[in-house]
Image (cartoon, rainbow, N blue to C red; front, side, top):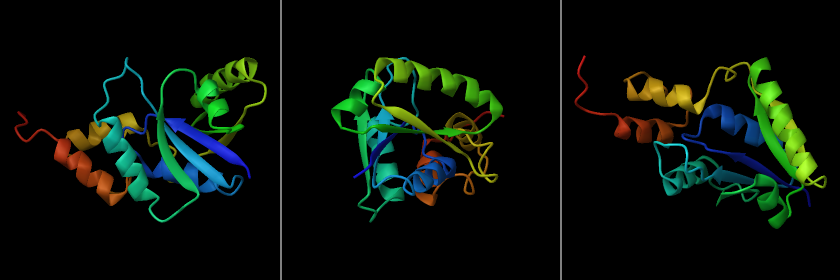
Length: 163
């Protein structure tokens, strides 16, 4: 069985993330979506909220599981016996950074490799950061995220915005 790991902050999960995960399942039998726990970031959603949103998006698909990790991704991937890391590329600007990460990870553990998927033309502009910003300012993100994520974002929006 081929097991892959798809790491990220997923704060929040977007349709771009879902697209990458579904296409990754074409080349692996099991996909672990791994939510990074990064103390330096100030996420909008708690780890458990993000985990629940991802589980809802993939409800009924036994090939997908969700977990958290902190520390080195290659160490976590080795621990769960996932020799493949999945990464999405939105634009050429992503490539250089992702290429550096993949090379570093490969130097740390040559048994783990990275597979890149280009985002679809309908989601290449999506980033969790932009989706959060638009949603918190009252913009419509219903075409960018699953319905349950759009609702969770709406619930986080400040109700007393001063214009």
